[in-house]
Image 1 (tube, rainbow, N blue to C red):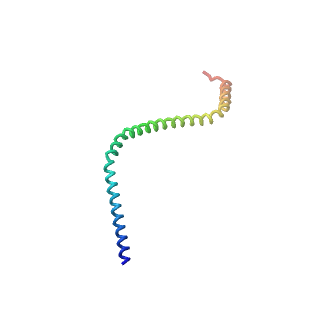
Image 2: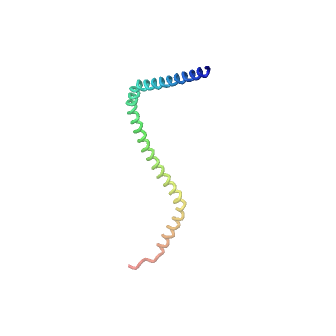
Image 3: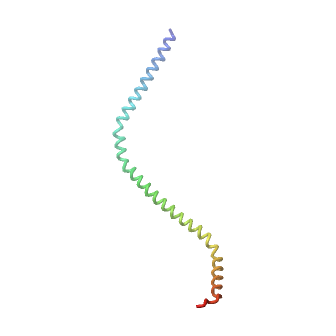
Length: 110
């Protein structure tokens, strides 16, 4: 007889648990429906702010990529100068030698 009482108690606890879960689901759905107008209102109010955020990010991306392009040109120019400047004395010696050779050449017959 005691086993039947235990089974009955477990069944009652199970039914109460199922009823509690069902009640929580119903309350959750009712709360979701009750707060839906506020969700829609906040969505409509935040839409212009989201569009403004997108516009600001787009402008920032364009300016950022522009600055990166300018920085790239400056870096390439700096590297080019770093390679060319040490060669300037050699260029000067070659230019002076060429000028001297040209001055010493006999004039062409006209």
